[in-house]
Image 1 (tube, one colour):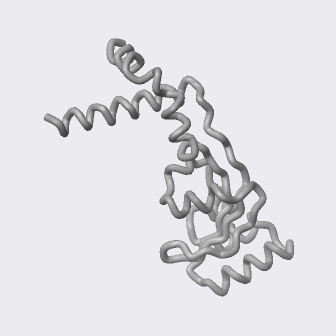
Image 2 (cartoon, helix red, strand yellow; image 1 turned 135 degrees about the vertical axis):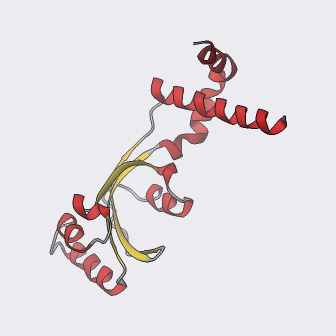
Image 3 (cartoon, one colour; image 1 turned 60 degrees about the horizontal axis):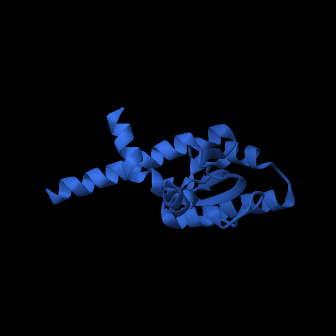
Length: 146
């Protein structure tokens, strides 16, 4: 209880600003993903999607080579900040419904369709999380200084 009061006394007044700084990292996204190691196959699947020959879920279940295949390609919701900046940028700069052209990603090629974006909310749980982050950063700085 004393620790919680300390956190609030130290950082509660900074939470609004800190939230705005972190918001894009806290926003969540749901997307569909097909990943293969065969660029030609990925291009073929992309054109099937464009032409409406098969659904994303069917193609993902049949061809995707990751755990998302079991869910018809569906991934998320996941916080944008959980990804490498380059991949996070791809997710944030496209709108729901966008089907992205095949992208090389590490050792595979992926097709992504943005399904939904869920904006972060400045609710009680988020405020507590941000207080905990600020406290942890302060503790790290104090330990390094000593």
